[in-house]
Image (cartoon, rainbow, N blue to C red):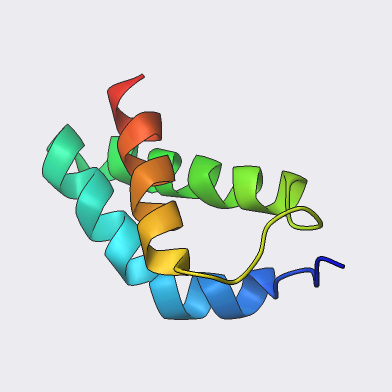
Amino acid sequence: MVVPIDVQEFYERYGPMVLRRCRGLLRDDNDALDAMQEVFVKVIDRQHTLEGHAPSSLLYRIATNEAIT
């Protein structure tokens, strides 16, 4: 059984990392903030199927994909 993740906890703990990644790729604060928001929208949409294993790796990958698309 998959235990849903706590999105708020993920946001508080990993939000700064996601924002740094987005800023590094996009080089624009507004675009980076938009991309970070999209990352967490995707997490919310899939929170019941995600597991809390290696969340930083997952969020880093989602941030990268969001920034380059």
